[in-house]
Length: 254
Image (cartoon, rainbow, N blue to C red; front, side, top):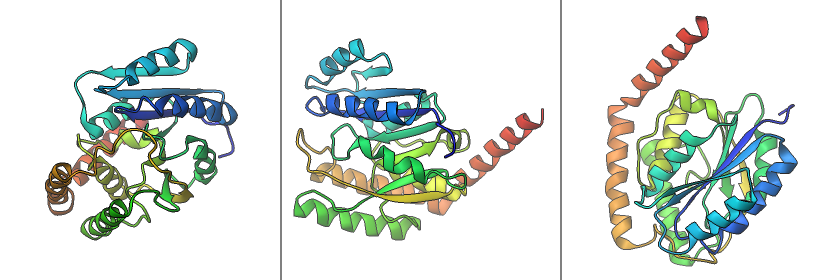
């Protein structure tokens, strides 16, 4: 991009006390290099460790940080929807608060956001997870790519830079981890353009994954089929996208 855009960076955080501090500070230092107009938002999602205390301490020292605390968990999808809705800048960057991605690699995403690109999607160079998680992740990736017709290398990489204006057209509804599939599918069906950039993926050093347990995997499977029925079979979101675009066009002409 030829100019220095304004940027919102946000993280959903659940029991990320051991990592969220470094994530926030690294992101603030990175944003200072990229823009003069930025904000960092953390959507604290019902943590039971000391994540809230860490964030309160950070907020006292960093005026660009906003902490949104929810004592009743929103779900991963609910946290992302809250972050997207709370962002006020031109561009939105998000990743998870568990430090499996390095927020300093935002500097790799931004140059790929050319005038003909709406979303820059990271894809993991190598997944730093135990073998069973790699296998489950690979099966999941191939299954959803086939079911939803995805064109990306890595739909499951939560390291993205998005133009905020796309959310004037695309509305998200999921409260669970399937929100990433909903996000990419709706953006793809709305005709928005993606670029992909390789990023590093690191071993989880603190806490436990909320996804890799069998009850949650079962629930995710059920939710995945429900989402497939909604977005691939019924396709009602296409009418919603068309209505929203018509409203925006009408407003622009007034």
